[in-house]
Amino acid sequence: MTSQVPDLWPPSAQEVVFLLLGVVALGSALLVVTTRQLVHAALWLVVCFGALAGGYLVLTAEFVAWVQVLIYVGAIVVLLLFGIMLTRAPIGRSAGLDSGNRVTAATVAVGTAAVLVTVVVQGFATAYTPLEPGGGAAATLGASIFRSWVLPFEALSVLLLAALIGAIVLSRTDIRPANPAADAGGPAAPTTPPHPPDPAPPPADGSGATAGETGSGRVSRDGG
Amino acid sequence: MHVVYPLVVSALLFSIGVYGVLARRNAILVLMSVELMLNAVNLNLVVFDVWLRDRLHGGQVLTLFVIVIAAAEVGLGLAIVLSVFRNRRTIDVDRLRDLSERDLMSPTTAGPPGSGPSGPPTPPDAGPAAPGPRPAPSGSGSAGALDPSEAG
Image (tube, rainbow over all chains, first blue to last red):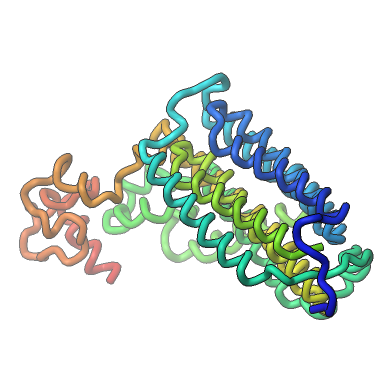
């Protein structure tokens, strides 16, 4: 890109900071995939995401860094911890966390790392850019989202709503098909098990109205 | 800032995620490893955005989108994991072998190997013999024989 590119090895101060953060991120990621305690894996994931957020800050992507802290550390790790607690995982040291094919997995991972690092180093060895602040500020990024990328943004909001409703339907246990429908309707009985979110067992004349009412009520409750 | 340093960090992070997905047995740990791989992709996107000086900031905007999609994916994945745990009392991905080809012959049906997985094209002439080869727990034989013709 630029005419004079500084040498690769004596790294500048920014690169030293980024490399230290990268080493922290890689070490904690390695602990995530090798630790024997399930809760510690989630906590090392916090360290890894925090170091990556610091790396985004060094790369002048401030808004992405804060979103990373808010959503990953604040929401996703908490969600994973909830999952760990709700599945009654062993809190202490447990031996059965690793599968039997660790050697194969390590071989595949080392092969992937070798291929990717070789390609990346050969392809981008001379790529250099000076860092200038302001490129990833919230103002510029927000203007970019709401001017150029507003259609994917809206589509993503629909996807989030669908994921929310899907998670609710999957995790609720009280909207299973009612069992008295099995002896009430003869031929319709075997079709009910593949459709758990179907809440309308009544006869066919009023089923559409009741389904519409319950659907609108649930949507309004979610929105409010 | 040389672009190589973040790219190498990203490649190594992705490989660590690959190892975690392949080597872990707990489903929640597999989800954590998927998150590591997504973060490697995010780092790549941010680095290329900063390097190319995109006027539309496509890389960083796409990073935000990937973060949102990762949140939705973890929510749905944990809902599925909790549902599996509620039904099976385990979330070991090594023990969830219902879709495996090897275990298909041994446990349940040894008589009709062809009609086991393909339920709907059952011959309609054998009314009371229908619940024999069907693995689905249907209530009455006539209803089970009538159902595919009714649905399809």
